[in-house]
Amino acid sequence: MLCQQCGRDFKDQRQLRQHVRWHDKKYRCKHEKCRDKRGFACQKDLARHQRTHDQIKGTQCPYCNRKISRLDNLEKHLTRAHKNIFWVAVISGDEATVKLLLQDGGDGKPKDIDNNMALVLATAKGHAGIVNLLLDNGADIEAKGNPRLTLREIALTGAKPIGWSGMTPLAVASKYGHEAVVEALLQRKAAVNNNGSESPLTYAACRGHASIVKLLLEAGADVNARGCFDTTALYLAAATGHEAVVRLLIDAGASVRGRGKMIPLSQAAREGHVAIVKLLMDHGAVPGPGGSV
Ligand SMILES: [Zn+2]
Ligand SMILES: [Zn+2]
Ligand SMILES: [Zn+2]
Image (cartoon, rainbow, N blue to C red; front, side):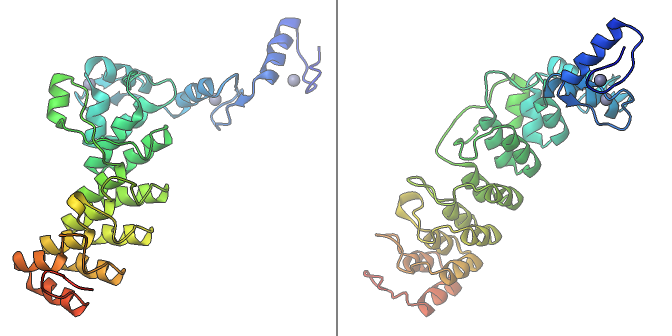
């Protein structure tokens, strides 16, 4: 009995029918260890099958060291034995566990929460690998949030992280100085200029993260964008004494006059940052109520 599609010979009708069904299955296992090149009707089934080829026998739970026979079972163990494990893994930077819980068919991620909260948490903690994983899994690169619970609180109480405010992931990463995360977000075209809310550049300038200021400027950040209380990045860097950042901003064409009553020169003088006062005056800032330039 010959297969009409490939000419293979079969002993009986039943075997032939089974084989013809295989032709209909679009997703084929191409793994070298797969002898019968099994076919599957959907991507998800193929992925589950392929994991059996890569499985490391006798793995261990990274949280309680319990011996686990198969990778599939580790996922079950994590979600059943460890409350809120997804959040703990996101916050502590356990990329392997996050990946395991996010993968096709994984049920470890809390169903009622999208990936956006996780993205903000991973960003705040500076875990670039997890940030990329979450973005690959549909998290919104402009998701706004500002998590207010500590890892300890979440792990101990099983509480969900709450507390959203207006910062985008790029603003959060800029504020906390996570350069790798800033790079990852910029590579994926995160907005460098927030319309309406405080710009990522002002957060980085205020905290003195010079390398991030540089990255943001190179990505097209508006050097005179508004920060909190009508400040600018230059005002904030001058006020907090971050000379390297002041230099970068002036070179990028920042207005030494600042905005409204927020005058960089006055504030740098008040705080006693002599080198910055000199730098600003060298670039046209004038003492006095007008501030000039
Ligand atoms: Zn055939
Ligand atoms: Zn296979
Ligand atoms: Zn465990």
